[in-house]
Structure formats: C-alpha cells, structure tokens
Length: 481
Image (cartoon, rainbow, N blue to C red; front, top):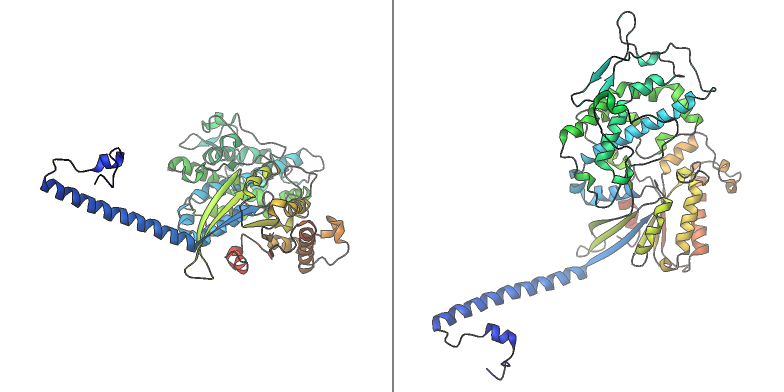
C-alpha cells in the first residue's frame, strides 16, 4: 500500500480505511465505493453521449440585417411559427396588447394629419352641419376613464358622426380622447422605460386627460422593447389588460368613420401617408380587434409592429434535410436597424456562418424616419455596399431577401413609377418583373464590385415575409439547411 500512495497524499489520507475497521464496516465501505463507481461510470457515459451528439449537431450562427421596418422581426416570427410552434402559441395573447397599440398609433397618425390639415386654409371642406358635444355629459367606466357622449338633436336622437363637418375635427379630438388613455396603458405594459410616450397617472376620469393631448405635428416616437424586458409575461393583471379593450370598443364607430371618410383619405393621400404599407396596419380589422374575445391570428402576429433595440439572440433546433442523424442548432441575431443602432452589428461579424439581409423594395418612394432627406431604398443600397465591403465578412455567405414584393406589386398597379424616384431606371418598363430584375442586378452589381472574394456564396430571393414561408421554401435551396 505504501508503494502506491504517498503518506502525504491528501486524497488517500481522506479515503483510506480506518486502521481499526471491522469486517462489517469494510463491507459497507466497499458497497458504497461500488455504488459510487456506477454513478461515476454513468456520468462518463453521459459526457461521451453529449460529445457524440455535438459532433452530429451543426451550429449555424446567422446575422439578420436590414434597415428599420425591413422585415427582420417578422422573419424571426416566421421562423418561430415554423420551428417553435408551442412557444409561438403560448405568446399569442401577449401580442394582443401590441396589436391594440398598433391600432391606436394608426388612429393617432390619422388625427395628427387631419388636425394639421384643419389649420390649413386649403384643407378640403364639406357643407355638412357640425356635431357638437355637451360639455357636461360624460360616461365614466368603472376604472374612472371618462368617455364623452355624443350630443343629441332636438328630437333627442343621438347624432351620427357622419353629420360632422369633416373640415373641423375638434369633435373627433374630443370623442377619441380616451384613446390617449389606452395608448398610455399599453405603452406602460410593453415599453422600455425610456421609450414611453407619456408618464403620470394613467387613469382618473376627466381630469386624467389634463396631461394628454393630440398634436398637430407627427410624433415619430415609437414604443420599443429591450432584450430581456420580458414584455410577453407582463399580463397578470387581467382587469388592467382589458381596460384598453373596453376603451377601443367604445371608440370603434368613431375610429371606423374617421378611417372611412373620403376627406381623411384625401388628406392622407395628399400628405403621402400610406398606412397600409407599414407593419402594424390593422385599420381594416378594427371590428374584430376591439372585440372582448379577440385572439390574434398567426397573420395578425406576423403583421404586428413592435420595435426592438439592441441585439436579441433567438435559438432554434432544426433537423438537417441532408441526414436524419444530423441536426442544426440555429442562433439568429436580430439587430435593431435604425441608423443609431447599426454600430451594434460589429461584435457579431467575426463568427457568423451567414448573413440574411432584408431589403424592402417597395419603399423606393419613401424616406427614412430618422432623416427625411434620405430615400429608404437608397439607404438599403448604401447599407448593402458597406456590408459587401467589410473585410471581416469577405467569406461569409450572403442571403439577400428583396422583401415586401407584394406591396411593390400593389404600388406599381396603382400607377406609381419607379423612374420618378430612381432616375437611373430611365425609361425602362414600369412592370413588376422588369423592376424586380433591375433590383436584383443592382444589388448583385454592388456585391461583385465591392466583395473581396468573388466566389463567396450568394443567394437572392423575392419575398413577402408576412405572406410567404420564405425561410422554409427559400433557405432550403442554400447550404445552410
């Protein structure tokens, strides 16, 4: 024994049998050592099995890039719907709050536009008699939110909103004032602390409106969430969650009348405000969304708009199409696309296997929210050029999604001409196929000119992320799946 163990070996000193160990004690000790050996062998076997599994499992790290509202978050939701349906289902009701907020924001945008037009002497007018509101008649909800009642005519009948003079929107400003309360409640539930539109008491009856008001200037401030904010799990207070629904339900007729008004549509068209092209557009679904039993559909969730900032990692486990024994562990990094957030892309450049770049091609007639002097399509092209020039990424495969092609078709069918906004298109045909081919060649030419490695893998697809199963149908043609 002394030849095998040093007398000062601490391990041997700790486990050596006692000098006066009895046969019964020795039997117990040996049995325990055998049991420990079995446990140790199982741990070793588990480690070997894990190593074997990791050898079969391929880890794919993808960087999802593109300007703000290019479709990145929608792509992630598509991926989740396809490969994590249980998680998608469990979060369904949380998206109800987001969709309600999207609806309120759209109505706010309309009111801002028409209020601004109301101060313009050239604003369209009608000859209808105005609707007046009795200042002392208010309905009050159980929570204290006050709803202005419509005034009545001489016969005691409630006046329809359709009778109001659409050149004077003061009635709508009052009638839809409760939406500001709904917006505040939803914002406080969803937003990161420094993105809130409003602060202070959310309720309090008529007096609660003192610090809330409509603006005659567009408010570009957007509610956003930060990674780790866990906004999807903040819905424990069912009563407070239902309050925005009650407010929206009470205001539904006014909202629908406002949206359906030809005068409003004329103002929006004149100001080049196309709400239907933006994510988070639910104005055509108001009756369904304001219902107390509303449950968001898959399409609702895909269309919902909630801005993310920073970098969010999403993990998905997929089976490889090439082998039943091989699996893919996808790590997709969703990065904020506004100009102020693009610096956060850099830390993820050194270890990604591929980059998915989303370029919305329907935005050729729009400008950046951050800079009204920069065309959105031109910004995508500049962003794509910088990506192709990046030396660290010179060998990383590129997957280009020319996104929002459904909106491009609709815009071209309405008579909008690309050459009006891109003079380089000259007098080419203004049809969908010709323009899509032009965009493909434009992005590919930039890649060829600025890529350091000409043979790098490159894939390009025309997509409509909210409508197509683009990740399943398109990425399977690459070497990534």
